Structure formats: structure tokens, C-alpha cells
Image 1 (spheres, rainbow, N blue to C red):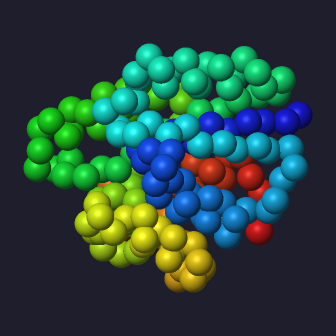
Image 2: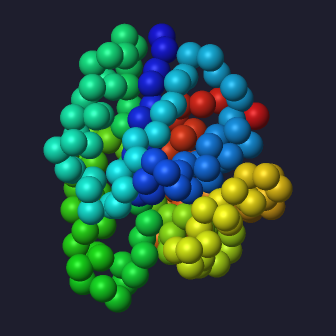
Amino acid sequence: MSRQLLLCVETNNRARTDYKYIDATIKRFYQDEKKIIYRPIFLGSKTKYNAKDKVREIQSHIKRYPGETTVIYFVDVDDYDVSPSTKRLYDDIYQYCITNDYEFVFFTIDVEDVFLGNKVNDDDKVKKADEFTRKKLIEKVPEKNLRSNERKRHCSNILNVLDQFWNKK
């Protein structure tokens, strides 16, 4: 049976930064499976995780697809440990995913920190994501950093979640 994966990312449709890192990860670690279709849902900000227009967009893709659909939220941890408002938002998104039977991927501190090893200024994010793709820098990212179950610096649970859907190379 075929499966559709909806990848809900914080970035917007114009920048597409988070999606570039995720797409590179899928292509590096997994076999190309014709029965799996994945498409991004650009939230524009993690605060829009349950915005009516985004919920409608997700539901529209689910209704139009004849096979099974899995929704995966990709969320930066940011300053979770020091900011009560960030912790509350992160925890709300996590609970939203549990309630809706969605998968949840975290990036500690953020997607750039996981894939590049450092924080990136907002003005440089598009340039750095393009460079990451062009230079195939995914090859330099330690796999163990992408298989964490703990929110540790430079780490994510992305492979732990995606392993459920793809066969590894």
C-alpha cells in the first residue's frame, strides 16, 4: 500500500530551509521508495502549528490521497530550558501531535545547529541551507546525532521517526 508523509516544518514556502535539511536526510539514509510520497507543509512559524489554514491544508492533502497518510511535525527546541514561553509552546505542540496521532521530530537547539553544528543568523539561513544541499554536507553529519531520544545539543530524533516508513540504505 502507498503512503503519504506530510512534513510540517517551521519555515515558510519561500525560504524552504528546514525542508532542505530534511530532504537531504531522507535521500542520504533511505532507499528511494516509489510507494512513499512526501510533501512539505510550510507553517511559517511553529506558533502556527494548529492554525486553521494549516489544519485545512493538512486535511485537504489527507482527503485527496487514496492511501495512508502520516503527519510529522518538525520542531526546533530553541531555548526550551531557559524560556517558560518556549517550553510551553514546545510542550503544546508535542501534546497536539499525541492528541492527533501525529509523529514528532525535534531539533536541539534548532535545525541548523543539528545539521551545521552551530546557530545561524536569520539573514543567513537560506544561504546556509543552499550551501548544505549544494556541497552535500549531509555526508558529514554524524548519524548518531540524528538518532537521539534526548534533547541534547546538535541532536535530533529524525532518523528514529523516519525509520518507521523507509528502508535504510
